[in-house]
Every structure is written in structure tokens, then in C-alpha cells.
Image 1: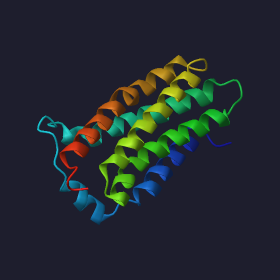
Image 2: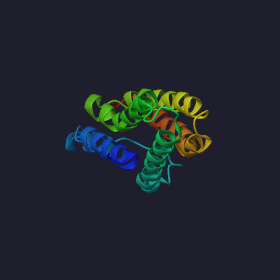
Image 3: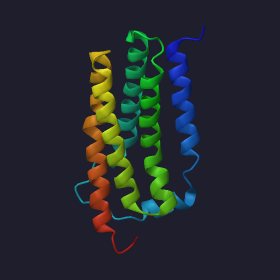
Length: 157
């Protein structure tokens, strides 16, 4: 039988790579031309922050898989998958529509999914819920930055 951590890791990588392929050079150029708030001094750390958050998410899913009475807990794994899809669609949604509001909406929706997931997994594993906290704290920050950028660039969209 395949190990749970391997299944979760493979699915997470496939989703990330698959949805990451939706990003286009044209979209990158468009996004890089957008004005940013002057206080956004930590933009270079964002890839590191997201890497940590995604690792915590995979680790959280692993904890739930191992702790759930019905092993594997397919319903909860589906919500983890939905959360990762929403996270990974943030950038392609902006690039495809060349619209920061799309990112704001996807970011906010992802946070709601994250809150629901944290509530659902708490009875199964408090550790799994704790591992979702970095996402629950960071997602509103990223969504807020995108919302501010939307205002700064409203004449450009």
C-alpha cells in the first residue's frame, strides 16, 4: 500500500505544477507593471512564505489522514484539495483576466475555505488545525495587498 504522505505529496505537487502552467509570460509582464503600495517591502519573501504555508498544509493533511477514524478521510482530503486549488488559482486568475480583483476574490474565497477546513479538522487533529494557522494568518495579508494594489492600479485594469 502506498504511504499517505506520498499520496498527499504527489497530489499537492501535481496540482501546483498543473495549475502553475496556467501562468503565462504575458501575465507575469502585466503583473510586474502593476504599482505596489510603498509599504510592501517584503515582496521578496513571499515565495518563501508560501513554500512554508504549503508544506504546513501538506503536513496538516497527513496528520488528518493518519488520525481520522475512517482512513483515508476522503471528504476532508477533498476539502484540502479544494483549498490547494484555490491557493494555486490566485495568480493564474489575475494573469488570465489581467485583473487584480480576480486575485482579491480568489484570495478571499481561499481564506473562507481554509477557515471551514480548520473547523472541520479540529475534532480529528488539533495539530492539523494548528498547521493551517500560517495560511489563515497570511492569506488575509496577501488578499489585502492585492486589494490595495487594485486601488492603486484601477485606471490600468
